[in-house]
Length: 223
Image (cartoon, rainbow, N blue to C red; front, side, top):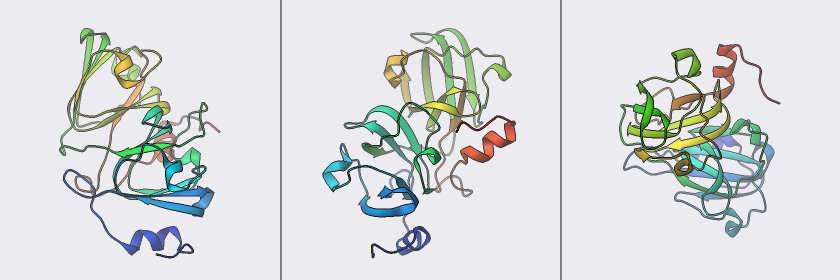
């Protein structure tokens, strides 16, 4: 694979299938629009600078999904990356707090089914909301408040957002129990929208589109 190949050419260079028990592949580029030094990954990386990258300006996910972090060692803000092209930082996040990308790991996708329980208080207490095989752009619109203090991810992999319309900081929920908002590295018990993390093995339409979903809701894009 040459340094001069375009993003579509690199996608066609080797076909991998993401999903449970399958391989993963992502390419990170130093500059926007898939330019500059690049590094390929098929497993987790605690510090992308060890691969010779001083920064990450664009991302090409050939098979996934993945979660990126704005600090080394899988810490800080989280960015969900499903199969597709991310030519600049604001295509993988619209958070205004960080422009960095320093570590990443593959996301577990255990099944095609999705079930999530949200609770307003720690320890799975208080008001509860169950979400099954659906994306929810606004918890308020479904009769639930924005306070989410504990979560049970019973099936599938999910991502929660601080604001409605899949905006703001992202929080990944792989299958398991999260008794307190500290368990998903949140500074506060606030989630206002959630969606399923997709994978080509289960969802043939491919990855989630943040821009199209926000437009469908009639919400303003954060610039």
